[in-house]
Length: 242
Ligand code: 5GP
Picture 1: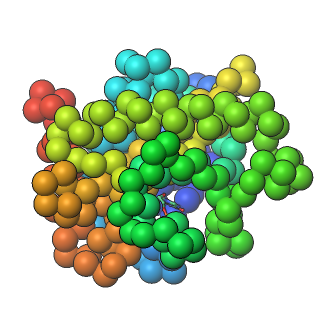
Picture 2: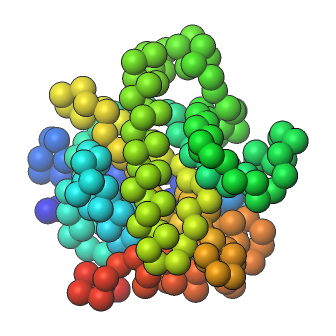
């Protein structure tokens, strides 16, 4: 499968057309950014680790009945994916209070959230990803109420599957962000990626961070070891390609 034209270049991934109009190649680059892209570094092999972790997670979700964009992983840093029209909403699920939640609201860091919080942010760097609610989403014309309900339900299903997947390898899924798009038939399908870039992952025993929060806190030298640890725990030996 050859990549043809670049159709979108984001902060850490580039999307290319292929010979098939219904499919795209998503290239995971080695870039790492924080603060709406203000801080940027290159981390060797980060793109490959994230693409393989994300592909593994998407495959597990498919096995559990969650439709995803994933089709194949022709190279460690390249995902062949169903072409989607992306919805500019970051759906965030929180199982434990931390990050922006405890900065913005009087909830103690580390509080267990049961049921989990479902939050939707507007994916827009210029406006710094502000939090949305149903009325704002509808006023902006981003999604209908029916679609909002589908996004909520799918994100909660994903949380159920992934909390179990990570718990089995000694990792707590603290919170994460997912993005969805519509396929050519109008179905809402999970897209983008699920990797340590968009999840908070804590070791169950030591509570040490195994995700991008290390980079956000300036601990750049620890980032790749954490990502490789997640890769080693999530990807079985016979599926390891790096
Ligand atoms: P918070 O709102 O606490 O900063 O983030 C909540 C969760 O969503 C974290 O797991 C974080 O990684 C993820 N998240 C929120 N916004 C973004 C974003 O713009 N990019 C990425 N990669 N992850 C995000």
